[in-house]
Image (cartoon, rainbow, N blue to C red):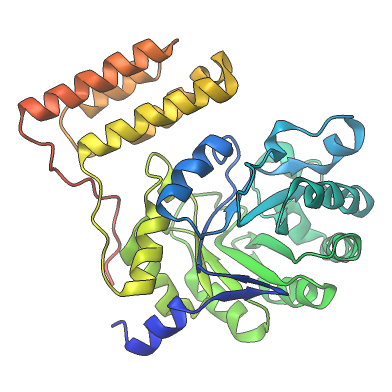
Length: 350
């Protein structure tokens, strides 16, 4: 499939979600334990006009806590940004949505796709695929509670032999959802196997609201292939940005220019890892150091010695330890004259 001028014209045009216009069709997915304020700052550096999402926030906790959870914290002037909520109680979700608006959210996103047991057992996330009546009531309650666009992120079904997305999607649109993001996997699949983009195409064909494709967007080429196959209005990057906050910007650059942006070198990747570590320390203290271990391990890819470096970074207890290891990796790359080595995430063939 070849990219045409008509494709580029469509992709570089603004994305309209309800009454709000966005200047990018590439979105950073909400990721639990990942898309905090520190991570979003890094992604936004390379994708300044792309929609970012907070980690998903439990509406029940908001109802019972006097202070809002730090997950909802948004930088002053951080736009566009959405706060994602989850729960199975429409009244709690409406209440939480109002508080999210007060925090500065430009849209409210409802999580109906998380496959994790601790979420689904409580009636949230992808369990709502089996409870469409409750899903509809949640959307209606949130739409009634706020005056900003309400969107939903979901999957194609609960099990591989129980794909219900077409009826589910129609119901959500009728209930007032103004954008739908579809992860092309079932809850049963979790993150295994290949995303079934063909179902996203079918959803796009029956809805009038924007449809965003999600699943297996690990590279610019994968995003292009997905958009061409599905006809979706945009793509949402998830696991492809783990240890690679450049991806959203790289895809956005191509959709707007038809050209590939230069990819970071291995040294630039290590420098970004250091900045991520510093940010987590400054924002969360020692808890941030512990959280940084997984992030730093994700940055280790594509050059000699990464396996050992990854193991060492997964055990750090201080910023100094992390800096020493990352600076050592940079020195080794310089010694091998590999500073210009390009880091390339997994690619898909068009």
